[in-house]
Structure formats: C-alpha cells, structure tokens
Image 1 (cartoon, rainbow, N blue to C red):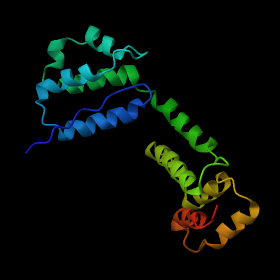
Image 2: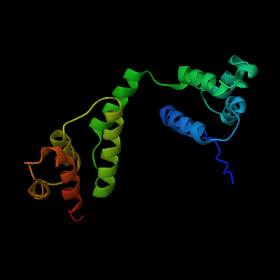
Image 3: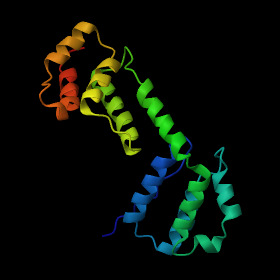
Image 4: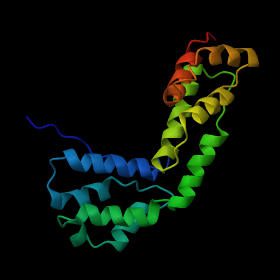
Length: 178
C-alpha cells in the first residue's frame, strides 16, 4: 500500500536552504507524477508571504513549463534565484551565529551543547572545519560556567587523544550538575 507524503511548505520563518533540502527529500520519495510536481509545489507556496514568491512564480513561469517532467527543476532554479542567499553572505551569517553564541543563565547544559553543535554543523557544511581541540575550548568558553567548573570539566579530558577532544568535552560538560 502506497503512503502519500505531503510536500514541504515554504514560509519565511524557515530558511530557504532548509526548505530546499526538504523539497529535494520529498522529490526522492513522492509517487506524484513528474509532470505534476512543479505545479503541485508552486501551489503550496504561500499567498501572503512578504516575498510574494507565489505571485512571482505564476507571473514569470509559464504553466506549461511547470507541467513538464522538468517542471520541479525549473521551479527550484527560479526559487534559488529569488530566495537563496548569496553563498558568501550565508556563510558569514552562519559563522557569526556560531561565533556569537553563548549559553544563557537559564539554558541547560544539554540544550547549550545541542545549539552549539547545530551551529557548528552549519558552518561545517559551508566548508569551515575546526580542529577538535579548538572546538572543545570554544564549547567550554561559551558554556558560561565558572573557572572552577571549567577546571572540573578539563579534568575529564584525555589530551593524548586530541581527535576526540570535542566529544570528550561535551561528555565531561554534561556530567556537571546544574
């Protein structure tokens, strides 16, 4: 029995990059005929978005082009042109989010590690990779913990195994009770 998976919905609260990844994933699993995919996705675009993307799609792309087997690719290329950030600007934004992130007083250590790690994975996807030692020390500095707590965390690290130092720092930091 076939399972119907609804296509992802775009909204300006979600990054275009994430929406595009969801769209490409949907394309891989949908059973919708190829010649219907472009139109189907165009119809899911929001009518009340400040970018007016749905209006632009239907004004600037011929319906016959959306109805082709390549209609979805045509639509994605159009969306890339109108919604995607410049790659360099996007890289800078993600790097600044990573660099400026700090744990708030009310945030748990586990949540902090999750956000820090997610921010790092975003810059890593952009080709910016930090050595595990640097990553471990950045995590500790941004955890907003006392010098004494930092020393406790450091005692849980094995400096002879530098390739796992970041994972060790996450584990040692989680062992602190807040």
